[in-house]
Length: 230
Image (cartoon, rainbow, N blue to C red; front, side, top):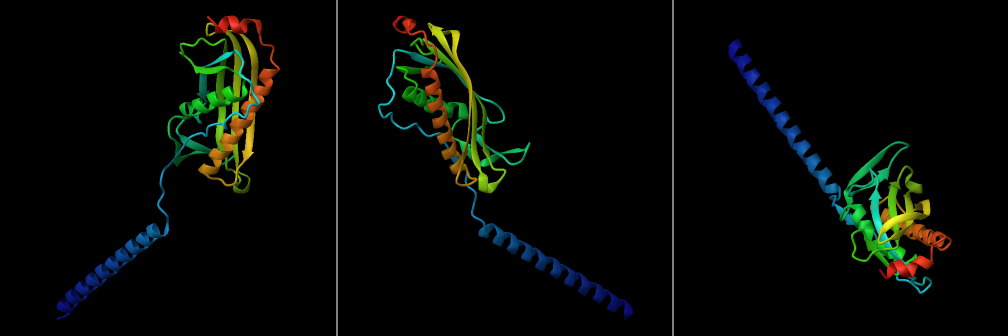
């Protein structure tokens, strides 16, 4: 009799244990489901740089043709994902916010627009164009990130180095202007959309300064028409 009692007790304990396990599994599933439903789904966003505003007539196009010899963005900012600075030596890539195309390609058209609008060039062409430039520029972007170390002081950071050369038939000869430009623009929030607005503002300010520096540069005006007409 004692043996039967012990067997029944063991069966009862096993059944009770299994019931507890099942209840806990159900509760865990409910908690996970509630957690997923309470958070908005994360959707990947894609961005592109804004086009510069239409010229208001302040800059007059000259005879010079500018060729963009190269436009490069330094690692780790050259990927499609937006980069945020989160600490003194730490950066992260946002897996849910990226450029539509690689940033070097995205930036090319706006840069042409800014230089054409404010630089006083008759044309701004890419490398390999049939139109031979008499001025060329090398553009290297060394910093392109959102400084999100402090959420209430977020900034859009851009640093770039530009070198302009005189050119004959598109081949660089002597340098005209070599300068590094940097901007840190406060943004309304530590977000991808606010960062893009800040970057557009930063690039606009940089190229306005570039245009001002070019107007003070010692260009060889006598060679302009002769080189352009070849």
